[in-house]
Image (cartoon, rainbow, N blue to C red):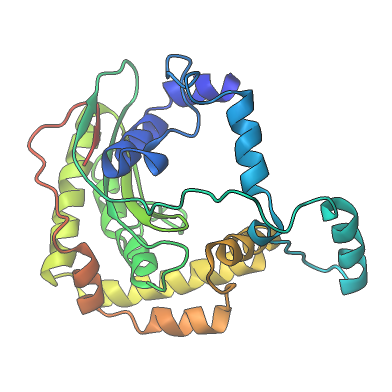
Amino acid sequence: MIRQKQAKVNAVAVALDAAHSVAFHTGLGAPLYPTPETPVASYLNESAVASFAQTAYTKSNIAVVADGASQANLSKWIESFFKAVPAESSSSLAQTASKYHGGEARIAKNGPNAITIAFPGASLSEDKPEFAVLAGLLGGESGIKWSPGFSLLSKAVAAAPGAQARATNYAYSDTGLFAIQISGTALAVRKVAEEAVKALKSVADGTVAQDDVKKAVAKAKFNLLAQSETSGTGLVHAGANMISGSQPLVVAQRLKALESVTDDKLKAVSSGYVPRLRYFPLITSI
């Protein structure tokens, strides 16, 4: 209930939920924290949860990843905690791949303002390092104190006091959603949103500066190395990759893949998704 209330008043969270909803409609379009008004009682109850658990929690759907543990101790605890887990289920989970639809949602809301611009991104099982570089190129949050940074969105935010922006690729098992999230005062959000569209257009047109692309590749490599040094982040990433059928993260291979990203690859993933923003309501997802 507390998480529901927090999500309901958080303009950025509401805008991101709306972006998923218009992008995928169902499945990934369902909010993680549905509001009390969401009609879930008709299909989400104790029996439905129990039935799902019996189908989903099988040995083939569970990955155990550990850091710093000996094989003997790990095997001991796995045997203890997962002994009763069935090898397979008598029924199978529905595995329909999420389909991208796209669209627009406008939500009137008191308080802070937010806009989310989103388009298809990279899934957990896809090797598309260009999305990591695109996130570094657009950026939004400076890594250097007292400096706006080199990224396209950070420059826009510096010129619009009161605004915040960030570009992120949300990766899931079968698809991804690349989102630009902007929040702040109404005028600042509008200004940064316009600049975000211009930035996307420059990437799609291949007119972005080569020096900025090189900096974005370096930023993506730095982010990868920083995440790989964080034990929890690495474990979650490895487990998610194993469950989705892809290989655990190999830092050296991923670094090499990032170095191969060019402006042509960035152009390929962004062209066709440059939005046409004419109106700027409080919360928008495109």
